[in-house]
Structure formats: C-alpha cells, structure tokens
Image 1 (tube, rainbow, N blue to C red):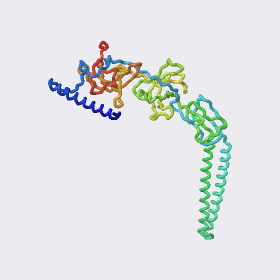
Image 2: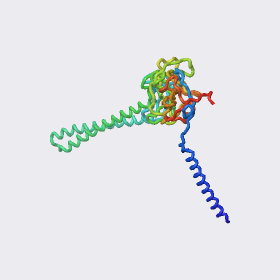
Image 3: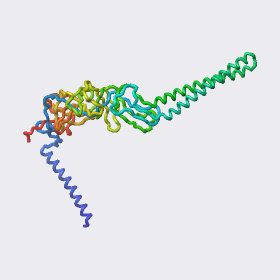
Image 4: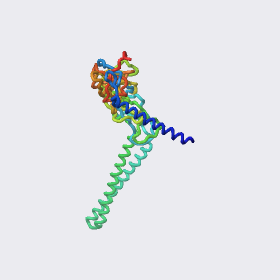
Length: 378
C-alpha cells in the first residue's frame, strides 16, 4: 500500500470514530435524562462586573492664584515725529530725556535748496506782477480808442483776455510762493506740544524722507505697563486684580487697571499686547523701566481630585461619579482650574463626599457597573 492510500484509510477511521462517539454520548444522555444547558456568564459573588479604585471627594478649598507677567513702562501718550519735507539733517537740538515746550526747535534740515526755490518763486511773482501792469495799461489805452471806434471790438477783446491771463498767472505765482515758503518753514521741526523726548532715530548728516520719524515725544507724564499675555491667560485679565511693581524696587506695589488689550496675537510671539494703567503711580518712574503685572484671583469652591480620575469625552474633561448603592456610574463634566503634582483643582456638578473612579477610568463607560476595590480584599 502506498503513502496516499494510507492517508485515506486514516481519515476514514477518524470520521467513523467521531460519529460513533457522538452517537454514544447522545444515547447515554437520553438514557439518563440529561439536557443541554446554554452558557451564562458568571458575575463576581457581589454582583459587580468591574472592580475599580475609588476616591472620596473631600471638602471644598479656597486658594489665591497668582500669575506674573513681565513687561516695561511705556508713555501713555507718545507720538513719533518727522519732517514734512525730505532733506539732509543739518542740526539736532535735543537729547533723550530733554523736556521741551510747544514750539521749541528739535531738528533742522539743510535749507540751501529751499532757499533757492524761494528766490525763484519770488522772482516769478515779480515777473507776473509786471505782466499784469503792462496788460492793464494796454487795456486802458485801447479802451479810449474803442470809444472813438478807432479799433475793432475783437482787438479790444484780445487785450482784455491778455489782461485776465496775466492776473491769473500772478495769482498762481503767489500760491507757489506760499507753498515754497511753507516748505522752507518745514525745514525746522518744532514740538507741537509740551513733552519729553524719549527716543531719537535721526542724526546729523542723515538724509530723511517725508514723514520718516526722527524722534519720539512723550506727551504728559502718565505712564503705563505694557506686557505680553499668552493666549491661555487672556481670560484671567477680566477676572483678576492687577498689581504692578518695578524690578528696581519690587517692594513698591501699585494698583493697576487693564486699559487696552490687543484683539490679535503677535505673528511672531503668539501673545497679546496688554496695557495697564497705574492708578496711583509711585515716584521716580521712567519710561523703559522693567515692570511686572501680578494677576491675583481668589478661587473658591474648588474640589481637589486625583489627576488619574480625569478622562476625555467629546473634547470635555470628565470624571466618573459612582452610585455606591447600585454601582452605576455617571459622567460628570468638570472645569480644571489648576494642576498640581498628582492632583487637580476642579469645579463641576460634584460635592464633598461623592465617590469617583480614580483608577481604571479607561475601562469605564456609561453602561458598566462597578464595585470599589478594598485594599483588604485579596
């Protein structure tokens, strides 16, 4: 007998044996009155399906949250100043920190080119005046001849037109002279109000364009604190008390009030500019000093829970609250106020004495029932 025939024989013997065994078991069961029982899952002796570690929430806590933002002192009112004409700076008459009065000279441009334009405009006015005088005299003479019909009406109309053109040219020349005179005046940059020079960006010999800032003038003496606020702390600005201090004298505290908050984050730092007004400024403050704003918020009615008890559900932070009588669980959304080493302070629909799942939250859902694990149990 070859190998293939042997395999066929063994397979036939196995099938006959299985059929015979099943028939014998069925016959024995019927003779003894046995019935097949369906499989049923067996629960733990106490009837729960999932064993979890629980945490009993303690009493509510009150704490003060302090957040410090560092910035600098800036003038409340300041404006960059520049020339209204282009040119080369010939003189600088102030220094940083100089107090100036309205009308005081700050910078001067080289006036040579403007003086030449002024002389040219004056000459144009004199020439236009001469043309007007000549045209007017010509009109007077021809008007007498026209009265005797010595000349035609068309000839007289030409003289009148020439007189009117000369007068218009004179008026235009005078307007150009005023413009040049103003430009000559603009060569001198003067303070438009009382203030203090806080920045200089122009120097003698520098060629500047129209409107290019050459200095910054602080108007008045009011200062404010400018800080950069991260986006996750913007909400604190509306609910916290602000206290300002100066790095050079940190013992001096000043109440501050949010005056302005940028509606858009900076493209580079991704922070928001916030300006705080000093309610009662201290003495001897100067622009540019390092300052800080401390945001103080009184956080009450918070509950402390383990960080391991929190889970995510539909982009919400939740905890699983346990009904100790039935073992049912319920998801409770919470708001995290602060994190600590292994715990978090939260607010939500919880109260002291409630039990929550503190370990095994990843295995819990709304339909499961749990029982609390007791460390004394095996």
